[in-house]
Length: 361
Image (cartoon, rainbow, N blue to C red; front, side, top):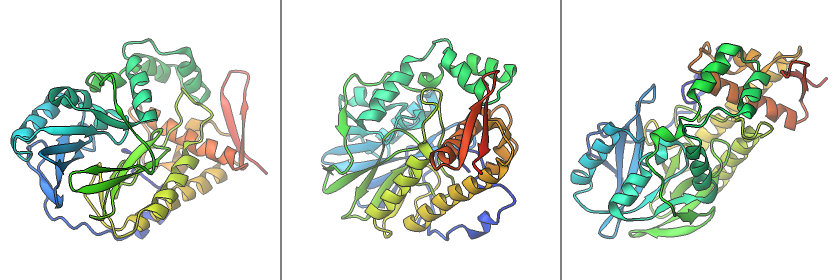
């Protein structure tokens, strides 16, 4: 899946060739219980509740002196804040949070960062692009949908009802995020810093978000991967109205190759969704291969000109209804822009402002 959309169209044998990953933990922490499973010395695995098909997000607490460094937080909801209170009294043993680290800007990762940081009077740690883009998107809360966004989705082939739905839902990003801290501690790619008894290195990636931070501890052979590498789903890689000509899929594929070249295959991967696993390199190869196969199917479908909404069948194994239309359109455009960047497709705008794509040659 890609955040709820199947990885490969049904005509491929892809799902029979998934890598055999090792899941070393028989028991997962109960979602929202405040209890944890220790996955490495001083590294705790907790689960916080999410709505929708994912159900939960994995968050991590790393022993840091007399307290805990928290990695990712879950959404700003009553259920999640209650779950954190249970964790503070339960698995975290009443010891304070020393810092809040967020892998990236999406609400399920940063939603309660401001609440926890203020509660314990500690710093938020993020990469620069993630922090400032999050602040920008939160500032859109309550705004009317911009005309640029309307033109963007009209160009993709959306009808009037879909665009009205976009207008009605616009500005909801910040509703799941507690007020962000007004300052932060910047993390940078390649930087190493100490948490408790161990050094952790920042490994960034792009495509799913602007500058997603993974945390790698060579001494413990552990990688906190956030959404950059997930064992059973592939994170959404989309083009958005703010940058309609972006090529996030090329960024994503390049980033996955970088993670593979940087981090050894022996690591225990701690992902934001699904379970901790081993088999990092095989999973990365599978993710890249799935996108490449999707690009090949898409190129074949462009023998005749198509709009973005006409190519879902080449990329997704399930019908796309109104609930998935925005995500599917963003992913389709990411693949289309990637083909254009490779010189394999072109885009033309008709007199009505709709984009049509066709394969070169």
